[in-house]
Picture 1: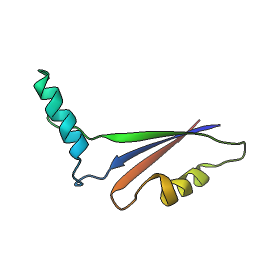
Picture 2 (picture 1 turned 180 degrees about the vertical axis):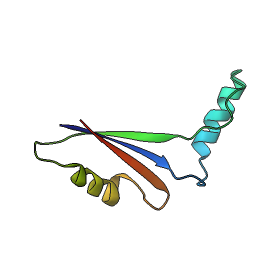
Picture 3 (picture 1 turned 180 degrees about the horizontal axis):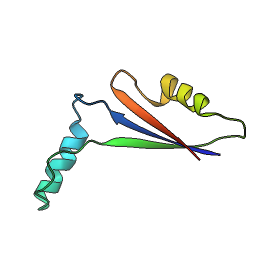
Length: 76
C-alpha cells in the first residue's frame, strides 16, 4: 500500500523559497503569478495492515514540523 503525504507551510508563515520561485518566474516573463507556496510530497510504501492513523503519527513525530507546517495524507 502507498501513502502520499503533502506538507506545506501554514498560512502566515514566511516562505522564502516560494518567494524566490515567484521572483524567478517574473524574471522569466510570467508576470501573472502573484504568490507561490512551496511544499514537499513524501511517498511511503507501507506493509499490509498499516493505517492512516499510523501515517498521521509518522507526520506528527517526524515528517512535518507541525508548529509551522500542515499536512494531508492520501492513502491508496
